[in-house]
Image (cartoon, rainbow over all chains, first blue to last red; front, side, top):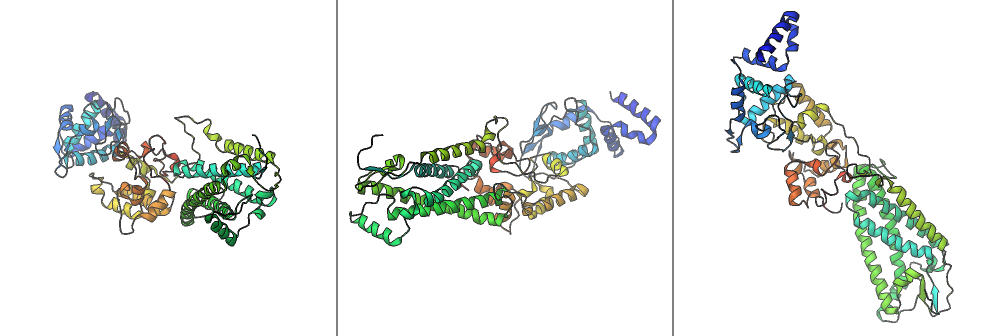
Length: 136
Length: 377
């Protein structure tokens, strides 16, 4: 699958030059960007591990993890830990709106890494998470 | 009805219809004083206005004992009557006694003023009714206060009136309540029956019934999923960026719910926004700041905005809407289940218009919000 997408990207590059980047989609854009920032190969397994990693918030003592709000099964509706607001499924297979907007992806990676892990994510972590979410 | 000799028809049918309709409308208004029942309250108010207007006219052109001329306002004769009553030697009055005439004139005048202040309040606070948009919120506040206190005053006069009637019943050994129902009073004098004027009473009753039907016709096609909303909801200014940014985690609370200084503080402290670092910056942040600044409570875009703008102490800039004095005052009677919803920030669980930001009393879900709102006001 990933190889297939890579071929499409390569062909697009060949045909359209730099302008073809737009066809690659926001996720591939971001993955390339993360790799440019020093990340290596992204895997679904690393993304899964990150998703389930528990971190204790030093201020509140709460144990936080991605799955707390987004559930372990990404195809299910989640729930905001503080406000209780329903969160649409993360899996693009059931919610095509996911991973479609680059700015939105960057904003939520930034905000949710800070809340969950207490720090910004590394390019490697962000890439693994996106790869895992994209596989669902 | 068997009429024994020496009973005379004293109260014509329109006077009796007026009396009981006014009593019913006053009771109706009393029990619908909660803002959630505003449309019903408003209807009873109009009914009172029409009834009192009729009574003033009937006091000039009605039958003998209904005319104001038969029960003039005189402090001296009222006092004399009360003194003689205390001594048990009160003179018999066919129509209203001199003390009763004070109660009647007071109630008529108070009712008229009550309707007037009600219409002003409705027009100023809600932008509805006969004087919609004529007055601002400050005038509405004064009219509302008079409206509330005058209602207690009327209740007091009604109580005096009832005490007076009961005293009259026992002192005179006659059933005054039955007289107001049948129109007949026992009388020793050779008093002629007044004309019953039943046609006018029938016309009054019909007018009230038709008026009620026309006023409440919107309820007929209403269903559980599509409830009837008596007042059009006002569309407060909304902004697409505001909606997107805020509703990512919670209801996009309308900026009119907090003063501008609260929003300034909200964005200044955005790295610790209820435990979350929002990381807003650049054009988005400027946009949100501008939208909240120009649509904060001070812009007075809704009655709630007016309350928020005037009840939050100038020295404080609350971040939590539920920490504002007005919110607390309006939600005094929350039960445990509703508190649960508050903690889950589910305004829209009871307020159907939470999304639009108006929070109109009429948009409160009657079932869910049953216990939630403070009575009165």
